[in-house]
Length: 161
Image (cartoon, rainbow, N blue to C red; front, top):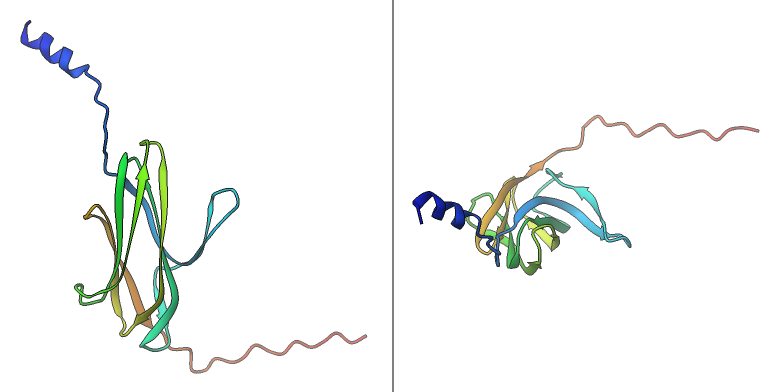
């Protein structure tokens, strides 16, 4: 068999993948995630910046919504909340999930209750699958003082009959 013929024959071989590391389709921090009856999700209060009047402050609950796709196999997701020093792990969560087909998707929600932010600064959310970092994004915590000269809204008058 000539070299070109052998290459052509080998390239036509179909490979059945038994494991493909999935892609992270999205990762969002929010206040709550509510499942709908039809299988969809409602994300409440998507957070890009935590505004607080003072620190330390405790968030009642933070949720990290992750959606995985284009993978095959069984996996372990790790979600970590990292302090501004970029080494201290404030919270971490782990969940196992599986994708049977590359066209399927998996949705994981990690809930961190009672998260204390001791100081302002840029915190980080890290998402890993099987110890491979898929995304690391900032979650700034900023002190925002209410305006000093804020006036209350005018009282509404009841219509006279």
